[in-house]
Image (cartoon, rainbow, N blue to C red; front, top):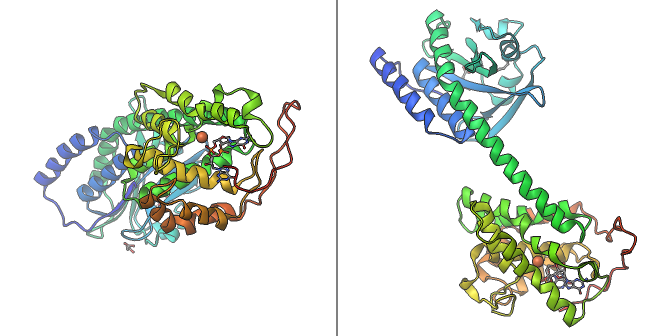
Length: 402
Ligand code: C2E
Ligand code: SIN
Ligand code: SIN
Ligand code: FE
């Protein structure tokens, strides 16, 4: 959210100095990139008293500039992307490292109205300066529009905006780095999860994605905050990690498992628990609870520990509904896919038995969204795995198997 519209009155020089001090203090404490850009845009709008401040950052991989801009007050932020090699003024600033100052944007052929169109804004005066790091590399562009007093941006405004950009550059770089580390951690987790499920299912990615989206929606519907819900979302792909420890003759068995084989299958929860035990990161701690307890049942009839009710960690109680719903909706080596609405009915029927009734109630609320995940997924049989030793079996009947 790196755009801010301003209604603040004109500030005195003293107030501006205070803002400058506050600016430095506030931005040095913020590691989350979105929040940081938001704060910067807010402060700049107040200090320069402009109608809008937008921060564009370079995405070198995609050769684009991006920003998040609100579509009207209080609405969701939309990501705007402009080609770095394009003709927009901000792209020119990013390429050349020069300042562009327009007295009347719409009359200047360098200005592209595309962004104004989607954000319902009318740029009159506009100033764009490069955001450079210590070594002079351009990281992006700070753009302000519409001075409150209606005048054109002057040399002093250019100096202030450049100064603020210089002050903000290192905080932005650090936050970007922090975000990259976070993203690569999530990517590692996800790839590990794919590895664990790969032998078993060929549609791993869809399965992991759906389970994680459903878990996330459930967490939000239960009133958890976005941060907690995101932990659950990010941890959920690892719930079956313990399956890596199972032998092929069990994991890949076409058709029903014998009771003895099912006993061994159950141990995937215990293995998962061991693999993730003592983890330091929050996301792996949540994954630990999920992998160990995702087959526990609300009435105590689950495994591996026969935990009951709220003794089962909430993360596992959430995950189990997402996991079972998705398992029912797709075909497995041992069963055909159920119809989405049949799977839904099963979840409702198991309230108070397998599942926490409160979470089943939350599932009811989100079901219309969940259903959309499956409408375009025509049920299909498991594809033949790479190793021909374990041919895909004809799916068994969809009848209850336990
Ligand atoms: P999975 O295939 O990912 O299924 C996860 C859970 O979804 C199951 O946990 C069960 O609670 C639910 N589920 C899946 N299919 C059905 C179904 O047709 N009917 C009902 N009522 N529930 C279903 P569960 O039973 O503890 O099984 C854990 C894992 O054990 C399964 O994960 C699967 O990998 C394996 N498994 C279970 N039964 C069989 C089987 O008969 N044959 C084979 N080859 N594997 C099985
Ligand atoms: C431009 O700078 O030419 C377009 C970007 C904007 O409207 O903010
Ligand atoms: C707006 O906030 O969208 C109005 C600004 C303008 O049209 O100058
Ligand atoms: Fe499992």
